[in-house]
Length: 136
Image (cartoon, rainbow, N blue to C red):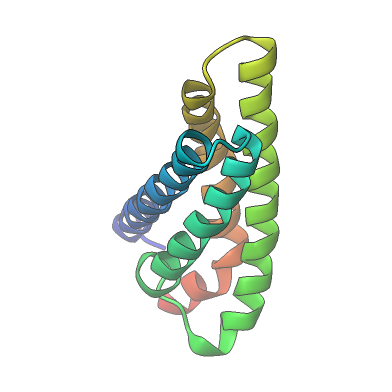
């Protein structure tokens, strides 16, 4: 993959992650602030809904999916989402309960770490790997 294509792919994936992240964070806030649930429930709920947004954008725009690979990609994506939700829940809990930072800020800190260190890497090089090879 050329440097320009790599930068384009990375930029699109980041925009997709941002859109999914906004939905994710918004759902978490609604769950906690309006429905008075625990922030972990909000993280899980937001993570599921945000993941649907993120997968759809990544598949059809960021990494330009092919229909014959959809079921394989979705299975891999679900594994990444479960890992991401676990990391976000654990990280947010750590910063909130141990370090005593407000859950909203803890979540943002955790999201930054998980987004770049886990989500993008696995989506780019595992979930959507075959698509990127076929584009070259």
